Length: 226
Length: 226
Image 1: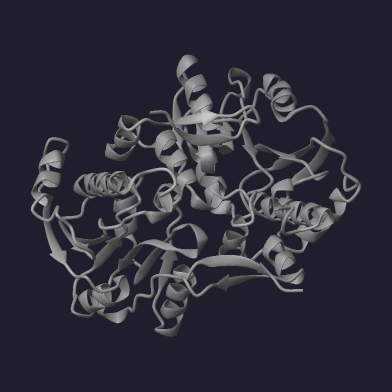
Image 2 (image 1 turned 30 degrees about the vertical axis):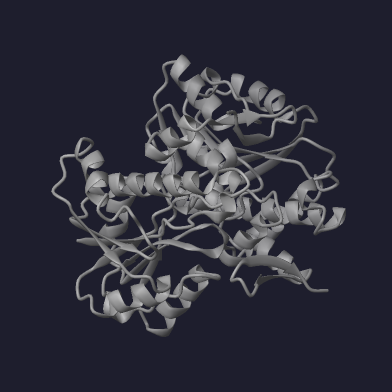
């Protein structure tokens, strides 16, 4: 089974700008992608297509990402990178329109994703499995007949996808996962990485001096100590 | 099996203060408690003890809460309310020290909780099941031998509870649920209620004019229209 991971490095994660430099944000984005790839490599997924929707000097480096992963997994997984600078919906809707086989679409900024969850998602028999992200988002989507679906990311995509399911008379399930719901966009999302992640992203954050701090009101924050 | 739900109405949800009046926040808190009780009533849990850690004019009203629920479930569940104005840790640690039977502790502000999740949590064979909340929190905790455990809510309670598990040589599992992780504390958490909840809390929010709004940057917000 194939998974598609849309990825944007250039100017990634701008909302972390008060906290991390542009280079750091881009490096964090690459490390999160690595964590997502590790989870995919350790799952039943056999093929990954990374769709890069911005300039990415790392397209040749994708081999390195693979290299980093090979040491972590006995993978029979094949990964390729495709560049498509259109918006997420345009790029992905073109892909799924042509796709006859079941497909998982997984965001690149959900580094807490586990292989156990990926396997549970793709085992569903429903036509569509929607995995919510926070604030009405859709962080993973499993399409048994991709050509029958239409993607509308941005806005309240969870509700839009549910509507599409109903309008097209498809069966669906909602897969409930805190770890997949946790996309890393804002400074306070870094807390989740530091508490729950043992992968590349948390290691990277610690290497640049980001750590957890509980203040005197017992409020937890991510803190920079450089 | 018994569940304990700590609840505080008085001055509840102060971080929603820029958006909701004190009365509205307290009413929202009661409606969230009702949603949590519905999920418990529809699960395998047989007994619920609500521990009220603040003044609650609703202690006599708990019967009403039960009344609202009776119409929704064929419940054989027994609910009682205990008042204990000490802090959460003090009140709950005293309860679990005396408790010989397996126990679920579930927060009152996680209205998206499903009965399916509750049943899956209490089916675990591990000594302890920890259900993370956002920002390092613990939103549900299942203790097979409550008298063997020690609770430390506040701060990074997830990590504190994992440490306690290890120090006491207990077996444990982490139960991964977006819906249980979603405690309603901040204005943007209301988005989750409006997108995913079909219960009392979302109905209440809509009744006081709170709705979803997607702005021109496709950012989703909860909005007041009165």
